[in-house]
Length: 485
Ligand code: COA
Image (cartoon, rainbow, N blue to C red; front, side, top):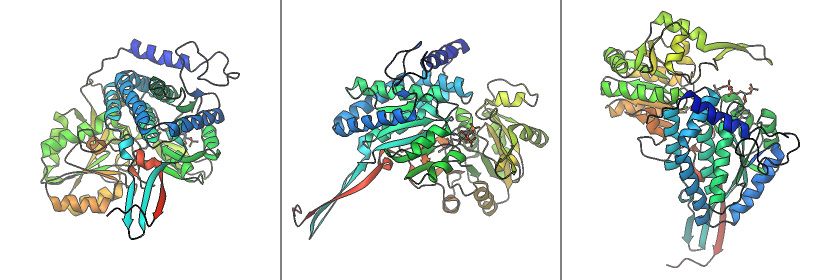
């Protein structure tokens, strides 16, 4: 889907949203939803986290009072607005975060609108027997505190909102500090959808300036019954150590194996399609390839035919010095490599320019042959750079791919027609998502069966989250009655 936004158009969208986030009397306003500002006002965005939580608590009461049909009306409106405003949110996300691609982000919003489950995801269970009837119902937690990322900002806010509201919860968001305008635009969209359906004006809430401190207020507030975190390793760890029930969706480093039974041409195309999708920002995207030596040349050729630009090993080493930088841990004094924020989610063309190579927009991805120890294999880069490691056989492929995944148990991919090889790798890698013979995004319902989400909770076990992930079970027992057979 080609969306050709001019820079001037993108700047205008960003400026209008930023204007709506900058009231004249920032300190004195008690509710950002109650006043209008220079730009169009954003509904549900508060100056203070405590106020946002109070508003989300009122939203929760309103959702509890709604019938399922009424909840579905709100959700239907969220889907409609999400589809209609997908290009705008996509452009805003790229402009604000400097990451990703407008056409792919547009497609991701439409995917969220179409394939995020609503209330149908919530199912009760009944057990009858000699002692009567026992009913298990999936109840809301209350107000959910949601930490959202910069990589898929509005997509995550909208996807979380649909699932959490479908489950009967209220929601307060603490968006990533680098994606505030985009995330809060999505909060406003959800609230507009609510008002259109006769729901509360503020159904979900957020803050003007989210920080780790506002997140901490959220962690500690008694009204917050469930925390859901989609983000980098640091913020996921902080949520999991909050002492509250938490769902954590963290990092991965998805490997791909291509064996000698694969449709190699298709594999080359699928891998480049998946790896370059939104410039590799989705956490499920292909991050390193282990190719049988016997088909590696053909695979690389197929990748080049599909928009990959091959660089030498020497240039890969030079690029590694740029896309990974040293960061000293202030507490331990230990220095380690982290991704260079200025390269994450950038176009392949922009990354190549950093090593003096000028190419056109037809180049979607940078590929290079490396050994297993290369930093491109070991680090999750989240940019369109794909290292390819040659392997002798399936044993070596599985051993190295499992090691490269670093036990994140997030996502892995394989191109093969050998069911024994496919089964062996799936069993060994133990990932939440395992995609066979398709681009990675098939794993989140894009050209693959199943629902979508951008909150993939491997560490805490919910998997691809949906409405039922945000519920708690309640049992109701009727003794010696209601078994009607
Ligand atoms: N609210 C408040 N603070 C947040 C936050 C949020 N929603 N998300 C992150 N932060 C904090 C981090 O804890 C970190 O604080 P610290 O420097 O004190 O440790 C700081 O903001 C910077 O965050 P981080 O995102 O780690 O750094 P970055 O902006 O330089 O990194 C990425 C950008 C893209 C590399 C990183 O965000 C990332 O790994 N994202 C993956 C997100 C994702 O989608 N994960 C789940 C997939 S299922």
